[in-house]
Length: 120
Image (cartoon, rainbow, N blue to C red; front, side, top):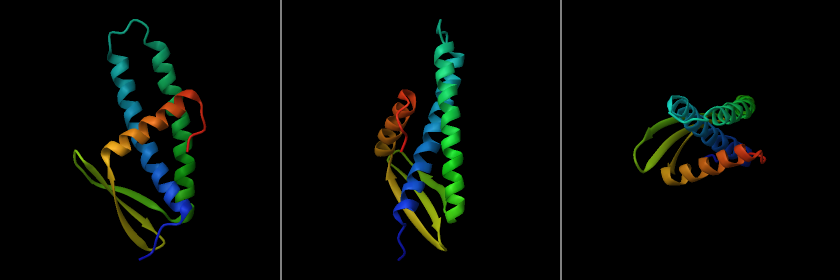
């Protein structure tokens, strides 16, 4: 059984986390835009700026994945686990992630993006 290299593993995990973070931030942006908050413009600008930075990071990650022939696909998810299929170097790997762990990782990633800290 072939294993992912350290770089392939880092890229696939970053891709998963950044995609999830993007979905969360887009949903939050939509909810804030529709909310009755008095001063929602600063929050909207922060989310839009963060989404822009996230898009640039994702573009870079996807370019590196394409260079390595790496592809990640979400298969199934329920309340407990999310299952991804990773295609690499002619091999297929199935990875299951605990949703609570993904939620914590995405939360940390978003906090880094908000504070301007270097994202993983």
